[in-house]
Length: 224
Image (cartoon, rainbow, N blue to C red):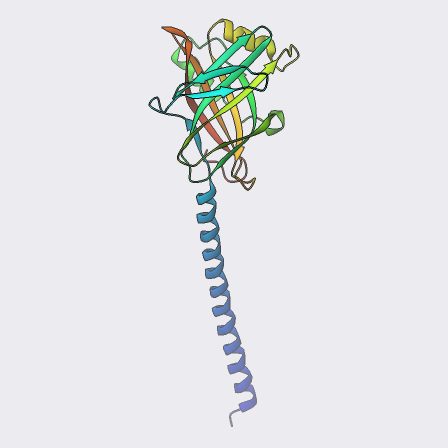
């Protein structure tokens, strides 16, 4: 004779197992949907800074001590006045979100490699800067999505500024200047470091050409 009590218990257990599997699958699907929605939201807020295009309009910039400069599209300026150095870059935000620039760091350009192998080695030695080494902006600088704006900073009579001797030597030799910018979205997340390079044109010492060299992600997986 069939043990109906045992059969009922087995059926109940099987039903519970099926329900658990269905619940687990539903939760996994919901988690995937939530992660996909979160990624879409982050992409919608994510800024990516590049050098502006040469055809972008020039921008007139003023520093707090009433120094003025005009920055052309695709370029920048480095003005050394007495013991002060004024720097600016014309930027374009190619991302979907508003960029807020938090800080900056200088990378003096050393004497260039003389062989292809040395050049390749120098490229491989480019490492991500430490965010703790960045100097905070005196005020927040914003770059709208799909539009142009600028970065500016100054070193005012600071002979103890990190790597000051290298900076002066790089400028005197017209080797240009690397500038690392730390920025993120307007909610304080998705921080990124972008390295820009300012190079003087050989036919015009007052004309600095700007290019972006590399990007590093801080708050999400890095592409490299």
